[in-house]
Length: 168
Image 1: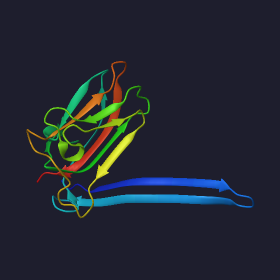
Image 2: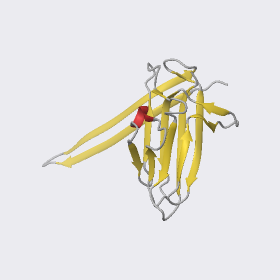
Image 3: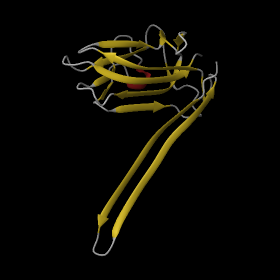
Image 4: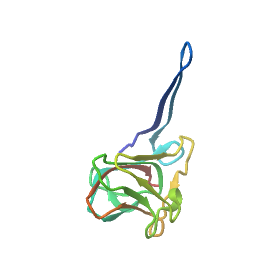
């Protein structure tokens, strides 16, 4: 089954300042993007996982990138390399969503102890360029866990996750 992926990050900022006779505007509009066809080399990806998930108060979960996830069709997914990762915390959350660290951490993106904290409504996205054949490697059994944690014990959190990568 082919997998075709498009990833992008967009920044749009407009600054204005009134001067004596004019209004000066500094518009910024940038889009960074990549397109991946189906396969396992540079500019390619052949596996995808996406889900909306809920973590109870103070709960954690391990997303096992090498065999612990299933695709939309119910088939087990084993990623060898990740080419794109997007995580979005629900704006309705009270607590933060924390990514990274843990046991057997997938450390090629965040290092073994690094974390990213997503405040309510926050998001992060990472993607490899179309010329990148490696992306972020996954090492089965020793470096394949993306830990996701609820930062506090008061309420549950909801987050969306999209992971695209290669089987070889």
